[in-house]
Image (cartoon, rainbow over all chains, first blue to last red; front, side):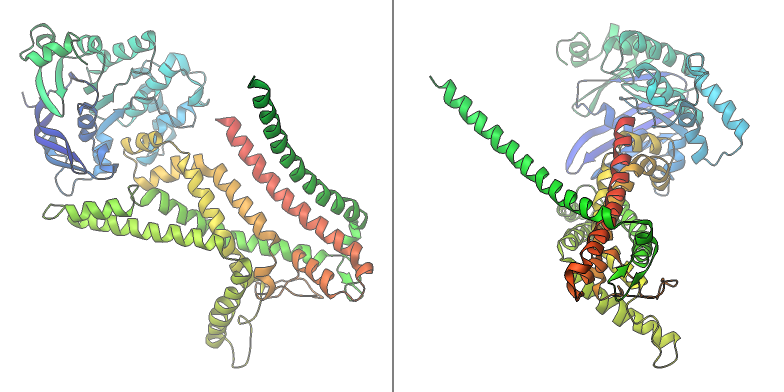
Length: 251
Length: 327
């Protein structure tokens, strides 16, 4: 099977300090891949390298190859803007725009040049349904998104990312600021979404990785320590470091 | 027993701090009260709708109100877009890490790909540094110097050049004091306030929102136009209004650049001279043959000028309050 995302000898620098060391992994299509590891291990940096969000950080520099469907993201001449349209992103802290619920979802379409009111209406509804938020907000689409609860805001952000029809969805600890019930909803959603999307999720929560992901990559000190099926990582890790981490001996 | 001594010093501190507040408020009240009591008697419908009569000894201040309004509008049209654009460039487009770090990164990058980009980055940071210190220094220049600059640059340099190119020899249209040049001079004075306030407003927009927009495939300009600017707009307007209201009362910059002692007509072209409330105050208080007789007019004019400035400031304050309550 050809991988959806292929990473080869990928290195990343902030200024002079190297934060990712020769990462190699293949992320399969329509599966959930979890990135775990202690704080500062580079998992978020790696995630943000997949849609080149790190480009906006001063002094950031990438070497090596990340390819989606065989197309190198870091090749010269790659249009970062259209690249990001193919790769949705959900952030650690929910960050809805201070606009209405409707306008939040419509944003990506509008900047994509979609003007047809009917297309936008349909996409807003479809995206909200996919993010399991439609029933809660369908009567108040015109109200400010900031009036929603934290969990609803995060699902809104997921719906917003889905509206531009990406095929990869990057999630950076999407539930870390949520209560257990909201977290559970997000996890159910992730499980649902993998039917249509390739999902890469960074998480601090070991149980969450075990529950939602098909494959797990364990990062430490900027290196990929182990990458395998989630079951193998948790039941029968190949490395002593991995075992120590998932059993909570450090973290 | 240490406590009583401590309590005493505490009381003295609170008393001294409180007293300074009382003094400030008292001074303000005396000034405003004095002007309000004396001015209110003079300010009638006639006063604000009639031109001056009898060698400025009687009549109203209508031309000065119109002149001030025209000046402020022209000035805002020039200063606000330019100031906002400068601030957007400084805050959104120049490297956040600053010049010295950007330059160091360029120097350390020897032999690597993307070196040209790092060089431009460092140069852009340098330009931002220069612009920021220019803005800071501009804010510290005395307003009379702006007036002289306006005379030398706008009128004698630009104005005369336009005249030479467009008018028959000897004809002077642009190369003299006018509404346009006075407004440009005032705009220079207002620019630093607008730039600083706009940068401040842009800083309040969370980086999260910029990232959310970029991650959806928006370009940087789309992000600024659709997310950053709408959020920063109330702050920008507040800053602009405060800058404008400061400019509205300034007299020194317009002394040599277009304000007129007395005009029998209203300005109807940008090349016309104009009367101005602040300048009118100066004239009434220094050029009158009978100071006692012009005193009511003086109070009335100051009252109107203050009222207009307060009105502008109040708009700014209300805008600011509304943004705060929305968050």
